[in-house]
Length: 363
Image 1: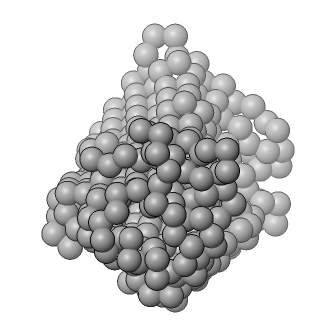
Image 2: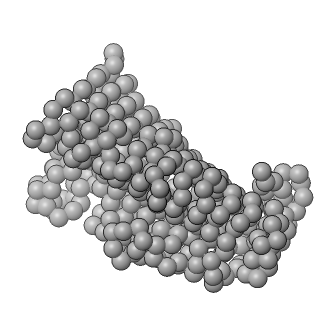
């Protein structure tokens, strides 16, 4: 639907797939005019400061010339499909607003080679009052990231991608070859930093492929009004207090050749948590783990805390183990058990395929 830039010419200017130069803009006014006129291929050829929300109402491709960036104090609002490539965005937008917002139904927003820094810290654990990298507020949308970095350096109430819809419906999220990070110090207790947050949505195709997601709190957080099928593959790393923190019935995780890290670095003396936490009410979840690595990290001053690979806090769960499951813990912080189940939890269906191997190593 648009001729997205495929390469740069010898001057570092974006070229469309047809080999033509994109329309160059050097300031905020030119960028706004180009977007308003519906120019399909726009190149940011100088550093631009965005002082007011930029609303996209017609399909567009926006790319950056070598080394150029957008510094924004207001969001880029997508009400039509958009492609962003080879672009740096340094954002300090108001709480509850992303560097990029998706605000219309049925659109596709793609980021390829984009580097987003969102500097805003939130004020409370509510998406309307948090620092957000990318914000989705409507349904039937697809968000795709490739070779993209999203960083939120603040340690208070931040989310890299917030998938929320006012009317429950579906969204798609695909993350490939990318690096997303919330918080700056994984050994310090941040306040509800989440990399991916799902609320009031159905996402039957969450793809995390060859990507690293680091959140000083939860990496993937799914609330009780959402349904999610997560496919984590190809050497991906999910690193946080919990890789998955799940509150919704019927959650499905297919994890293959990837690593889940749980960092139990919060106030004890006896906090119990896990790399995967299936919370109260989240019945009928399915975990398919193939050649999966679990790493547990309990910092020295809180050695009385307990960290498990998986914590079942609701009944009627299925865990299927294929290939191997490697458990790594640290000397002096040995895991007491690989799995835990709350009192009263029943009907845990744990299946091992032929040849499955459980490996426990200490580092």
